[in-house]
Amino acid sequence: MQNSKSIFGFLLKSKGRHGIHSPFVFDFVDNCLTTKVDKNFLTSRKKWLQKVKKNREQFKITDLGAGSKQMGKTRSVSDLARNASSKGLYGEILWKIANHYKPTLLLELGTSIGTGSIHLKSGNPAGHLITVEGCDAILARASQQFDTWDLSGITTICSSFEDFVKLPSIGTYDLIFLDGNHSGKATRNYIDSLFEHTHSNTAFILDDIRWSDDMWDCWNELVSDSRFHVSIDLGRMGILWRREEQTKEGFTIRPKVFKTKLF
Image (cartoon, rainbow, N blue to C red; front, side):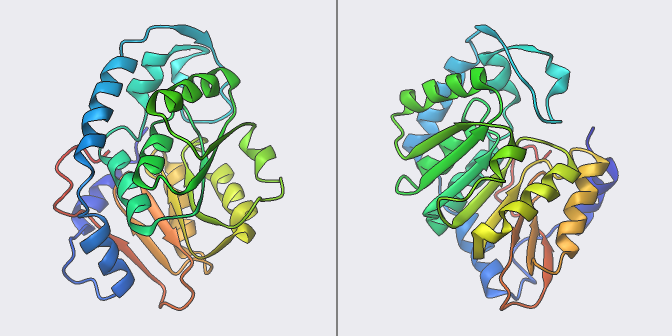
């Protein structure tokens, strides 16, 4: 259930580019968020979503997270596509971030049908994306979608997030997208485990920060965490950067480009 109090607070506090004095955050708002998403990509995405939403193939799933238990143990490709969090506005934000910052190594925890992966890789085709999914049946169908999009540079890993974050990293992540287990405690544990494999400008992107009171508490604890000096609340999504050279500051932003549903 969405944290309604935090949503109301967001609507009251959020602002656009004016009043932002941090050059880094101003660049994010004024350049990254206002980037035009490639028209060919948007056209292809529309056709792809129309197609997968019609796919009624049923399969059994293993749900290791806290975000989609209401969907049951049997799902269809259509279910995954309809419930994907990154297919609209926030998918476009992922595309814009990947396109603007050009991350070399990206990590996604929570592949689902592959919408987040598709936006990140299409925004920055040169980057290498590692995407982790706990259910092999879901991952197999996501891989089919990557083939449909003819995307390369994606490594798919079937693993629980808890097991994956304990593994040695193949490098230093430039972007980490957490979109699988909507548990505040688990989210904090993943960030703690992955932190040593990041650098000052690594973007930690958290989806559904208002999913529940637990996730909202988690987000606020991370905003207050001394390791992170820049936090941006975008409504449903939150972004953290270490940026030790900056004065610690948090921003709540609702740019004019947000013309669709925020939550």
